[in-house]
Image (cartoon, one colour):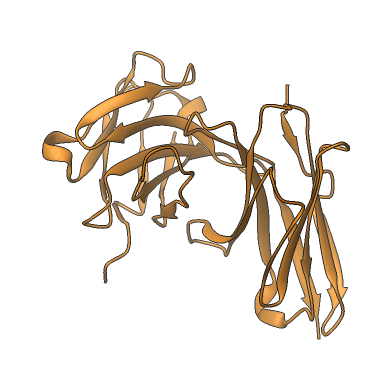
Amino acid sequence: DTGVSQDPRHKITKRGQNVTFRCDPISEHNRLYWYRQTLGQGPEFLTYFQNEAQLEKSRLLSDRFSAERPKGSFSTLEIQRTEQGDSAMYLCASSLARGLINEKLFFGSGTQLSVL
Amino acid sequence: DQQVKQNSPSLSVQEGRISILNCDYTNSMFDYFLWYKKYPAEGPTFLISISSIKDKNEDGRFTVFLNKSAKHLSLHIVPSQPGDSAVYFCAASDSNYQLIWGAGTKLIIKP
């Protein structure tokens, strides 16, 4: 399978705990995105990487959130001191960017986070 | 402030008929628009896109129309098939590599 994979699919945690999600993009893709989606809403942009460089972060990404993409391959998204408002589907997407041409994103199946 | 709006949360269409999904936007700087389809428990999958220099793009049963003066785009699916039942998201980009998404429209195709 050469699609975008995310792990875990589901995560239930208690308020105040830290959680970490992993995303493995399509191997030749140089861009990797993290989105968050809540019920009845479209995905909201969190951050994106061009290779290993984190180029943009949304205002939604508080200092409790951190994302990394070491070596420009897989990425991790960590949420520290989780709050109930963090409960959402966290989606990862990757793309093969060619200059300024808008590229289509390939999404993983997401990690559903529930904070109790 | 919602820059991309899909005002119909759901739409029910008879199999074989045309499905029309609508999307409105407010930001005149948007220059690229995409439609994604999402099945339950899966991530969105790309369906079709259109650049602001065009007013129509067609791919098989799917056609996207763009009306820049009205800041409106629509997705036409004809003929509609049961496998088209899904949530459809409209998204827009202003070349900043961020996509701004609508809230989605759930399409139900009735047999």
